[in-house]
Length: 296
Ligand SMILES: Cc1cc2nc3c(=O)[nH]c(=O)nc-3n(C[C@H](O)[C@H](O)[C@H](O)COP(=O)(O)OP(=O)(O)OC[C@H]3O[C@@H](n4cnc5c(N)ncnc54)[C@H](O)[C@@H]3O)c2cc1C
Image (cartoon, rainbow, N blue to C red):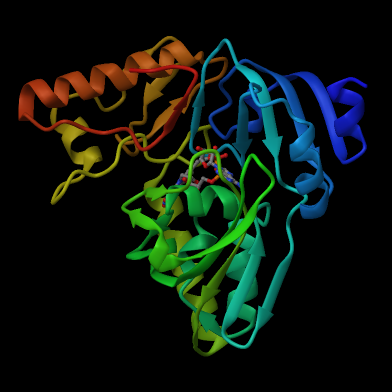
């Protein structure tokens, strides 16, 4: 039986799938295959069918990705149907495909604090844990209790937060591990107060970020003690356009797609900002956006 027939027993499989529409930046070529398993059990069974030499790329909401115009020559794994959400006491457990905004909403309704920032970060639980997402002084690693992973050989293991090296926008996962779910240890707080904090965070976001145009959030990590946006602005690149992409004139650490931007347009802007900041300030900016199939 072919791989397509094998995998179709466990979910939805398509060939030659356009990826641009699956990223918030709206850039990227096609995936050779895209597989969306029905649930965790289906994925655990399907993983054995995928040949060892097939490259697997797990995708969440695609909100932190710059995918090459040539696409991904492998199997893109969409875990959006692994979206269970559960609260028990002060513990919240979410599946890899649960939207972070929904997780924040559930925590708030249950009167639990610690995940308010998730109301303002696009993306799913898997991407949030993989990136150690955070905002407004909170981040995943502050409240993460454990993460359940699936390895290429079908082994499921649960690692506690202390077993994971998590830093600013970085989580060291075992090689090729897929995040299935995660649990968070939260603290009780009045639900209305939690919701109010989320409303304030959202309002601040829309004031400062160019949310009307396709983008991938912060392009660079903030260097210790400074802000990438301030540095890019200081070297005169705010508003700079290449092809159909430009450095936002609202927030210089955002690159926006004006319509039909290519990966190369965005890459050239990233290279330019990195080189100019290095030349004029000596600071080496490190990308926060994940480059998939392309490099600086
Ligand atoms: C407007 C905007 C604002 C943003 N603001 C913030 C912010 O304030 N703070 C912040 O931290 N980020 C921010 N981001 C970036 C982005 O939202 C986060 O990095 C988010 O956590 C990415 O989640 P995702 O589901 O979109 O992951 P994707 O972008 O799809 O993937 C990101 C990485 O995670 C990996 N991954 C995804 N799922 C899994 C899985 N199940 N198992 C293993 N690996 C997996 C992918 O392979 C990839 O390497 C912003 C982005 C946008 C567009």
